[in-house]
Image (tube, rainbow, N blue to C red):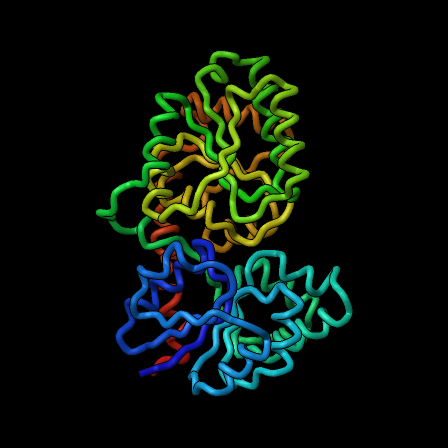
Length: 368
């Protein structure tokens, strides 16, 4: 029996993917040392040992005391993670899972102590799991990672690959009913300034001048993620009201929902939007692909790298209200993506973004 420890936040769909995978393994026992709240989903994963991290000392003692064959570190953004794990963890086999571009701030913007500790943590890691562009940037800021063993690792929940018998929550049922027969534009993203919600809102205002008939039939939903910049949220709300778009554009702050619910929402989506200044490779992109949903996305290096690597028919928009408005009109008129292009993106998602397959590839280097 392989004993594996995983350390990270106790919330979010990204963590649930790992728990779901390990819960099904017969030759692996996972101990999840977490901070945060796992009460929403803990009971689902009966084969996982949940241990709340009480203190830095408690974490380090637990990891030294138990003879784990592998340690998986999720994130490594906080000064606590960087300093204590780099100073006290002495394991031959460590996988560091780099989440998003926040990890780069540990190299670029944070204190000297955190930069040094983060570099030490990366040096300790036997293998790094991250999207292509993020790994390249990590090597840029931390050249000693050049040649470090690396897995392209991202994916979407198993519910998107298989049928689920789980019923919908009342929240999701009510939300879908609320949409009625409107043209549903979906923007699921944390409310952070790197997401250009302002341009998306201006695009709807631009489209209203040219095609008020489309806007009248549209419901534009900004679906909040795990992180919310309250000041930015207020600015977005003010802009929506100032432009008189509060009946068209809604910001939905929702409870934590199971992946089966999110999948059903995606099946109802007519068009997805993701305008962003910087990113790794978002789950939302894969979810749009696998549900054959047309996607308006601007060109950033991370998306370009994936497009070129897999020869995908992914279309980029300019980061401007007019360009976005034009593409919304094209999508509404069924003149944006053709079915062959959507089928190609769906096939890529099925083949390359299956969590279980990608986790097997990663862990096959360590499991007996």
